[in-house]
Amino acid sequence: MPLRPWCQHLQGTDGRHGHQRRLTSIGGTIYAQYLLYIDPDSTFGVVNSVEIMLRAYHRGPGTILGPLLGSVVLTPLSEITRLAFQSYSGVYLMIYGLILWP
Image (tube, rainbow, N blue to C red; front, side):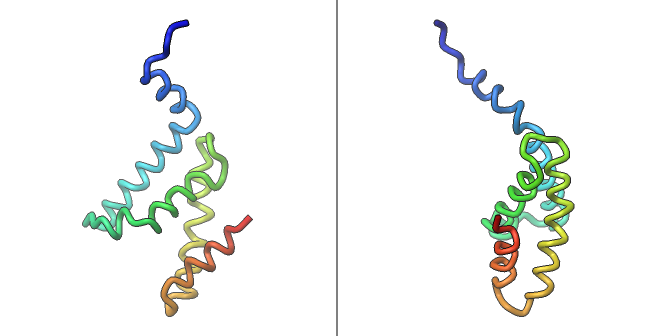
């Protein structure tokens, strides 16, 4: 039985999550252009990375419309909690997490 080269293994996973990876990278690129400055703490911080991944996987992993619908639902929710609890440092993240709790 011949061994599969490592590139075939990588190609096999691209079919299921390839669209999400592409749309997530496009979203990150647009976000970096919006900031006009790439700072490792603000652009690639843990909070932003988790929010981007949540938007991509929230409404159906493996679908083309899943990341789009996840962004449509989660972006206003994130901004509403951020505005409602802006006077308290970090509380909006806890409230946002409680809302997303299954």
